[in-house]
Image (cartoon, rainbow, N blue to C red; front, top):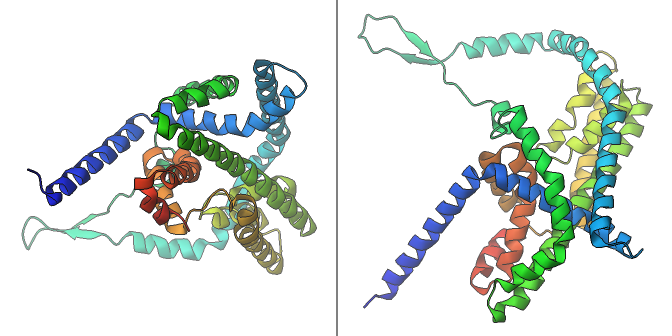
Length: 349
């Protein structure tokens, strides 16, 4: 007869085994799962548009097609509008890079001297010459492009997103009902409510981030224009949306205006640029995010940090984008499963 201690150990063994299998599945199924999650985010984002079009007595399939075509048209328009400025900006990058290198030359020389320091390995006795071994570190580009594969693979995966989004929109009600029916009868109401809350959370996350990014971008364009920052319209929007990157946003948002401003702006103007970027980032973090996302997404900073590290390591840049909505969905599920409520408390604020 099993004792309580044996049962507990058996339970934890099965739990750890299940977690391990989920991690392996997420790691090796990245190309499928990442596309699926991106399509799910888009479908929840476009769902209000589809519902609005249905009020004009349009069939859901037609409404979904129109909303998807409108989204692709907007993305195409943004790409075309920014392409020319991006090309001009890219052509001027070498000029700004040369100015930055001349300014940072003393720091670079010091860094080169430090780089020469390595681990001294002497395996051939006291009289053998010393060999300097330098540890190779994985670069940020390797981390961010993890799992990206070739350009063909990326394009093939991305091409599935619109079609998958369309089918998710057209089969939204059927998919939700069929998912609820997978659960036992006494759990179906909980499953229905949970799916609804996850959908509202995803909509709030996407729309909230888009509104915050647009607001910060517009203010940035205005401030950079007053300070005569080169390419202020392009740099302002780039800085505004880079500020949305979790944790690194405040640093990434400073890079474009500072890079084009070095050698072009006075030191006082550069300081004003830095202060404005930091101020807008803190305002968004402490005011806009709680107002737009606080009621739907209640995750503590430690949980967010661990989620970003985990999904970033598993899926690279795509994982950093999807980490917060995935973790928010997990918390909602834990909130509505009695045995998992302690995990929800740990993830929550």
